[in-house]
Image (cartoon, each protein chain N blue to C red):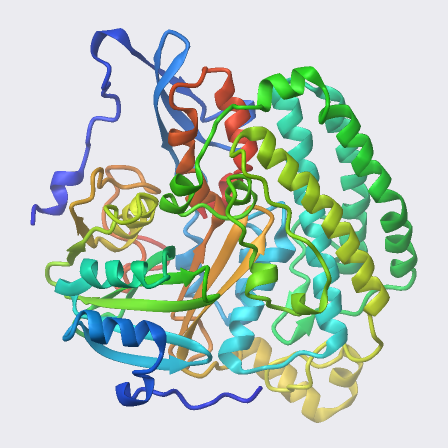
Length: 405
Length: 162
């Protein structure tokens, strides 16, 4: 095998088209790249010959940092990976640790998690829809989407005290119970939101400009999607009928009744249709979760793992000791390894957690959906027009925090 | 949901579909297996890696969900490369692990089977320094080209070299 030095300083700009083509740099500060993504576009006139993404601008070494933290301290790190659906990342991580511990959570915590996880999906899809439409030139949708997103962020603030980096889920449940008046607020939202989805749809679905910019653009076949390890709406737009929530239920999704929208066209419009369908399903899941939400404890009865109530900690000696121990020493997790995959708004978000029996994880690996899905950009855009690259990026809904970690 | 003890006896696991197809299709490839917390892990001899993944791919485990590595410094063989495979048909996951020595860490690339493995292998190369033989474009992916060292190795300090 050659030595590692051989892989250094490979020339970044080299063309395959000879004199006919030129290399155009897009990003890392381009507004439609949804973060700091740099694309090297090799173009022949206005036609794309090859695309090479250059990533890593947002790499902060989260996986390494996790190894130096207690299990409970990793939760805030997971928010920052995919900042549009922090709850989904929280969920994947706490599920993985609960699986390592063999810990069961009370039903109320489970339903709260389901409800907020689906709200995160709506939140993420609204940002996707607004920015995607704006990239293609439909300005109005953005304002409507962000009006509803604002309501969701308010709800996140009500439960967790934070609008975006919620860190609300805990190993063994959630950090605190739902506040007074929250259920009325979310019921009101769930009542009017389905109409709003139709409003967005009216603005776009039959709009001739929208159809012209999305139909038949950035095609990807089912075979290519499998080869490229795509997941989520990007794969479902190409006819792969797979959704982890339905096919490998976790966190109580088997108790919900929902359909999985699948399209076979494999173009930008198909992915748009899938995500619009998911918005409708998600709000129905939120309603089911509200209807099923039971009373009871919101965190597991495991004093050595779950922090005690504030009141108990101040009045009972034993709780004070447990609190002190968990905060200063963390809790130990039996040796082993688990992989927990969840369906994030972008695809399969997987947490691979290895424990060596101490209070800090030996290894935390995040299999992020955007990292795999970004791969498809090259295949999607080949022989398409330069202007359609923006539509393709929007349609795979990448989050650069998720790509770079 | 109390924890069940892990099953590590290959005899008890030989009826699991993934283990069974590997044992019959490629005798000698399976080193050991473990069933723990509802997840099946199979250790494969590194020279049989591509053949084993191919056998599994035809036996319905057609999706490579994830590819990563773990550093067990200072024990030897130092690295484990981890392949998470998923079966759309069986709704089942398995984990394939291959041990890689620390002195000269390299392993066959699986980009021939799944083109999408390319960035995952580049990431493992970047952060662990494991080289993938046959990878079409093995360069650093997250870190700058002139970065010294491989941060996810256990002998690399968390705060970096100052």
